[in-house]
Image 1 (cartoon, rainbow, N blue to C red):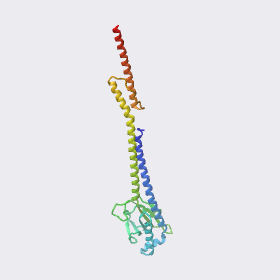
Image 2: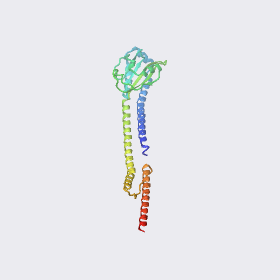
Image 3: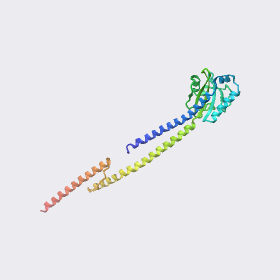
Image 4: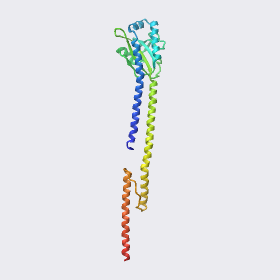
Amino acid sequence: ARYTFPFVIPLLVVLALVSYLAVRSLTMGNYTSAAFSVARSLAAGMAGDEFAAEMREGARNDYWRDVRKRLERAQDNTRASFIYLMGEPGHNQHRFYAAAYRDRPIGFRMDKGLFPAELQRTFDSGVPLRSRIHPDRFTNPDEESGRFVSTYAPVHDSGGTVVGVVGVDVDVGPACAEANVFGATLLATVLLLAAVVALVMLLVTRRSLGRPLTAISEASRMLAEGDPKIPDLPEPDNEIGLLAHNIRSVARAVDTLVTGVDKLSSRAFSGSDE
């Protein structure tokens, strides 16, 4: 077991890391899936032909107020941070029609570089798309702040042309924080478990090696003093046991040698007496 222990701890750490990444991905996936559903639902409720006409007219009429209320209601009832409806873009700029809780005039323009590239690709492809994590450039165009994911759903007119896009930005910072707490807890648990196992193995090792080494040390001292009558030594199935076996063999050989010398001495003295 002591040979496999050094490999178990890195394996547990790797498993903890994989679990953390999986939980982080799952949590963020839940956030973005909800945002996708909101964007698609709002886009499906927009009459594309009417919206295109109102976008061209640019008046804050009942239609505009109804659209804005729908956006605000959706933002109130979901985790969405920002919800907005964009009209067809210009050459280098995106144009707003309405935004929840943002006083943007109809046709208000912002540089395309302030938005994820997926917004323009949604206009081009006509399919819903989601962005990677990006900072909050929507409300703070000069700051690299926040951790957001944007989802986009197209608004089609009766001819199938994309005339607008509903954007839903969701702050995934809480999702990252949840995953970080889980990862830290899991890693702390793994490290605590490793410490407990290491302590147990240390105690077992000291017990399994301490007694044989003490007995071998005492036997070596006795042999050094010329006493081959050493006590029985424990012989565990490892290098310590092999050493104990060799010391016992040496002790037996010394004892046999001493006994032989004693016999020869006794015979020599007996012959001299005669």
